[in-house]
Structures are given as C-alpha cells and as structure tokens.
Image 1 (cartoon, rainbow, N blue to C red):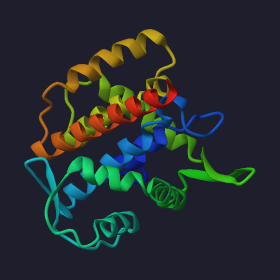
Image 2: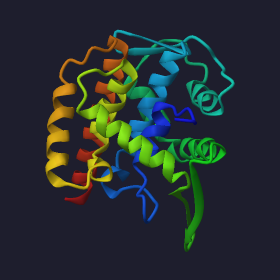
Image 3: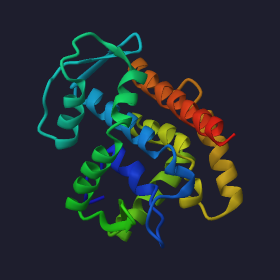
Image 4: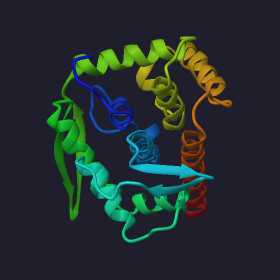
Length: 221
C-alpha cells in the first residue's frame, strides 16, 4: 500500500459507507470509543504512554503529531497513573475535536473528503471516501487477515478492535461470509498473544462500549 495508515485511520476508513458516505449506523455509537482506544495503543507503541496494572501514565508530555499532542493536553497536570476508563472518558468529552483532527490528518493523505453539513443550529462533518483504490485494498487485506493463520501483532490488534466496531457488512457482502468472519474474530479475541497493556486497553474499550449502550438503553426506557 502506498500510503502508511495508522490503526485509528484504518478503523475509521473502514467504517465509512462506500456509496453514501458518512459512518455506518452499526458503528456510529461506538466509533469514537474504538478510535480513542486505537490512539492510546498507537501512543503506547511510540512510548509516549506507559501502562501498568491497568493504569496509564505519561512518559512524554508532548509529541509532534497534532492528535497525540492534543490528547496529552487533556492529561493536564495529572501526575499519578489513572485507569484506562478515566482517559477514555476524558477523551470522550472532546470527541468532536479529536474527530476533526483525525479528519484533517486523513484529508491530508487524500483518503477522505469532508462535507460540511448543517441542520438548524447543528453543524457536523460528513466523511466521504476519496481514495477508493486504497479503500478496496484495505478491505481486501482485512478480509484476508481475518481468515489467515499467520497474523503479525498489528494485524491482530486491528482485528480485535474491528470486532468492537460491528462493521463486517462493510467488508463482506455475503451473509455467510459475515457469519464465518464473526466467529473467527470471536476466537481471535480469546486470550490473544498481545502485551498486557494492549489487552488492558482492549478491555477498557469493551467496558466503555457496554457502559455507553447501557446508558442509552436506560435513557430510552
């Protein structure tokens, strides 16, 4: 692939509807949580963050990447390690800003274009796929990886996070393929060979998604 994509970019790119643009409805409620977790994993891999005993601490207070620097700014003057759910919650309060920074990064790579939308006083950004060749290639690579027995660690993390997004309909048009892929992803998520810090973030993402769904259900009842 000509362009280097980060985990957060791949997941967001795959969540965009190919024809209509915008995010898939199945992913819309949890996309920010999964992307925020992917960003934390990226920062962990860059040694910007440390994770021990399920708690995150900051090793570097700034970074040249604009998204990472913004997230680090949310840490403020907190010195003590805090649990992953704390940081995911703090990032969630700034989800719009983080999404716009992600949009800007992906626009710069000419992966997507952004349509400005407004209804009354509500404004939002609707992403559209710009690089269809890259999108098809990413879909092909991910679909192959799901059924592969030889995955590198980054591919494994991508697939585990993909399971939380519920976007298999974007990748497989056939229902039977989606069913088999769902079963494969479930098996991959059972005690995966990744670091404990990565596992802690994945668990934190899943807990945050369950909590968000529970809150939405309670609000609707």
